Image 1 (cartoon, rainbow, N blue to C red):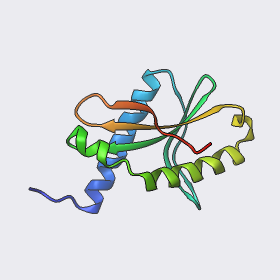
Image 2 (cartoon, rainbow, N blue to C red):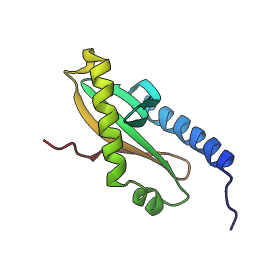
Image 3 (cartoon, helix red, strand yellow):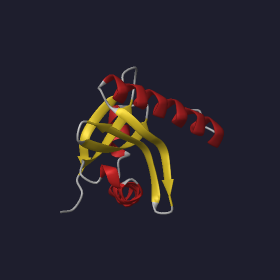
Image 4 (cartoon, rainbow, N blue to C red):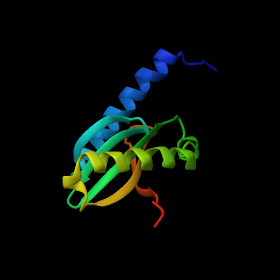
Length: 121
């Protein structure tokens, strides 16, 4: 089994995000931001389609089960905090429905999972 260097993992992460962006674009989403960094966390992709603003976590793994298991509740907190800052900095999106999605990059075609996490009411 070959271990990845930090540089290889970083490069593969960029490629996975690029593939996720194109998957979302082909589904009709506009990409508003990539690697959106805040002091509270980072969002891989911010996308909009109609009245929905989607905050997307991208996971690239060799197997679907491994990619699914990589979606941790702690990550949701990070993404949710960063999402609240995104909306505060871009108030024209305040009326949009917020959704927390994932794109799993496994094999050829990335899998989009809408609403993988739910924000507390």
